Image 1: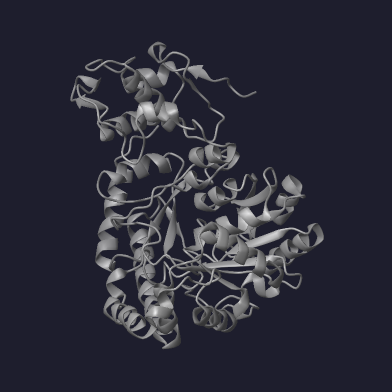
Image 2 (image 1 turned 135 degrees about the horizontal axis):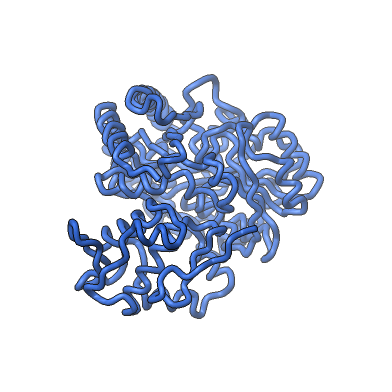
Length: 501
């Protein structure tokens, strides 16, 4: 029987810890303490209970309390005095980094729709825009030919001029759509014509657009567990009810999805390179997923995350290429192959959806900026994209091998690395006495970005309790081999210094 929630401190009033909830206990304790400080229930200079005493009194691990205190310390809400304890700061920050002030938090959701509140409250993971080791999804920008890109932008303006300044086609720049269709047919075995390609401002916009078009509020939608929070947010924005479906070594468990939500209207999957686990969906699972969609008249949205960087064997065919019923929508992006600020992605839709998508784009935003599309068309058509992709694939293969070798040497006997056959990150599996969220927060203080695997689980539950969701993600693309080796060693020292519960 689950233990009921209990108040943490008498000064916190009715605040409670939900021991069976999805949010980690250290985050709940941190928020409760921070709100008590902002509300004046914990006054400047007041001493917080010793971490060991609080942990004992409320049946928490000491790591949980220490992590909550450390977060408050890092954000300036408390100060620490060696040998004296932890005290509420005399002067408080306006708001937590990346967060909102106590007064704004109290107003959160005021005037919002149900979908707006769901979006505002949806878990999210901050992206590291500084490019610290081991930031995810950050390519090696030093290897991109920005001089050539500038020339292409200038050439498009000089030769396109007035034509590029007129209102764009809501579906995108025609020559670019044709080039993308040819590329996808040749490299990813996608079955499409240029008319089916829609240019969007990044894959995330494409996912949100499809969710708005295909889902009614309350419709069920499968999401991978674990999975990228941004994908879930796109579905929440359409009012969908999310059905978390577990991922194993063969990809999304279709049988589990049918048991949990057989009547779902949509499944959002990453079959070629699942994020964050890095597995590839087996052929048997792909066929079963397609059969389910055809039988239920449901949609499959295939997010082709990171598929360009494959290090073993030939490129995999897309799930869309196996679809004979027109139920798969294929989504891709150029941001990770080229550079993150290039907000250009694409969606390949079945023929019957072309005109509804055109109408929706006309109403929503009118289309995507044309000049970058024209430059990207030339980048593809002149062979620069293929050349850059080959160079990056070779470069990242070297970096991938380097970080795996460093992990094997430094973490031997303590943690293991899992690296799929594609992508720009590896997963470092940690032992149970090294909680991933604690290590991630401590690593951040020495300049390392190590997103915890547990933060990508929505249902939070038996998987993380069993230790299967305990690990950190290490992106390797943005740094050279020497920097990666130093960062791995720094992370290992940080892990070794963690107190054991």
